[in-house]
Image (cartoon, rainbow, N blue to C red; front, top):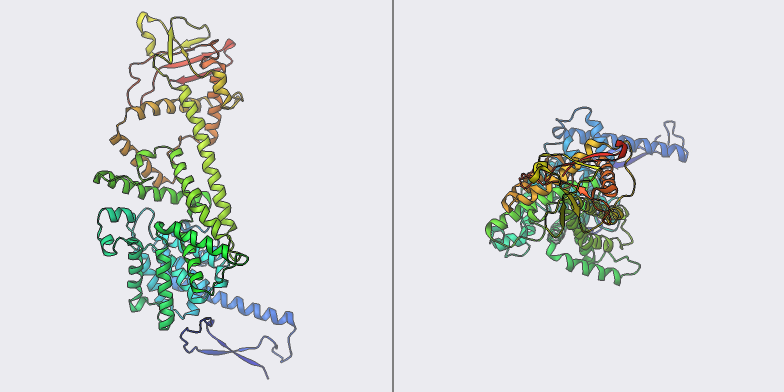
Length: 588
């Protein structure tokens, strides 16, 4: 006779608090893995094989169930739905999970798609007996509750929730928490910016916005987000907390309030200090999560950390979010300018017209806010955040490299710009036999050509700060001409613009960057071509385009159109060495 054991049709989890409301489950009979079809006892390896096969069957069945439930959100996906589910499930706990890619697969409701998988993969649905119908209805309402802002939208909510999911699962935090704390943490992350309309708390307060007045100017946005999520939960069809007893429900809701309020940047410093003091006072950096105050603070800091986690992700993913949040900042800055209010630091698009200014803002954000928070959080001995810390260091170093490259390019601009100030420029009627000047400006007084001696930094001094290599035969002369043309036209164009024109220009650049995903605040030349061009330009400096200790002179002439917006300043200069071995056409 075969031995039978009783198992539940769904996994049962007992909340450690003992407060989870119990409900009956339908049971079925399964054969014990300890005996075979002939009634003989199986070996350990045979029993493990049976258990593995059963587990694989359950996983396959759950995958089919998930496919069936999510089919409405995958209708626009070409190919096999199972392949999509496999890809997402395989990476659902990875730190560098790309929500933009998932949004392409499930464009109708990406938050629903990923949110459902997170609740299922973390077993919250089973632990709290959340029906699929209620979970999908709740996630759908949350998805709709996010507005279509560049940054604070449903994808941001999804990204933050996923980052929290990573900390809880792969990061190891959930092993030191109760189930209801896990539920509160994931739900808070998913809903933490519900209804956000891309403006900051100080702006709402300063303009006496209705939301600020409603919540007494105390974390008005965060208070609104909390209210909106509880409004969704109050709908019977969306109540995923339905099976919680009154005591657990209050615990979950109170923790959600505390966690979402902690995302207000105004309390960043306060919570960071409290957290560091807690770590210092603990034994071996292991504060007891069983203490309510301790667990609350840890989860508050965890949500705040994932809310500002973009710089702790892979560069390509991070920079997409950077452009989006700057778009919102600059939009608010425009409103502040129109209202005559002081423009918030970092919100003035007129003060972020190049990549160096953008880099400075991000380096401040990482160095002063994000990195210290992650360093403190990483002291928890039972949390693994090595991967986020790695990306923070890499991205900070990347910004520093960008600044260094920008400064290098600026030195070239300064060297190539024709300064017509009398104290910096000296003209003579002599003509170098090695230099031939071409262009309309040669029709100056007397029909002669002028040679320009640039005072100040010598060619050797300029070269010392730049590359030393000579250009190779592979250097592309056409690209070099484009670089020079860009430098000179950009200088003339920027100098001719008033603030209004600069504002419109900045908006166009920002819109283009948002649409194409490219950074257009740097020179629009591929890195490889730009590096090659810089070698040629540096070589021009070294061979005599500018005076080196008074031994050489560069020929140039002025053009009447030099002040026109977008036009080249000066005329074309061609250096022709002996035998014609070195040539470079430069639009000055």
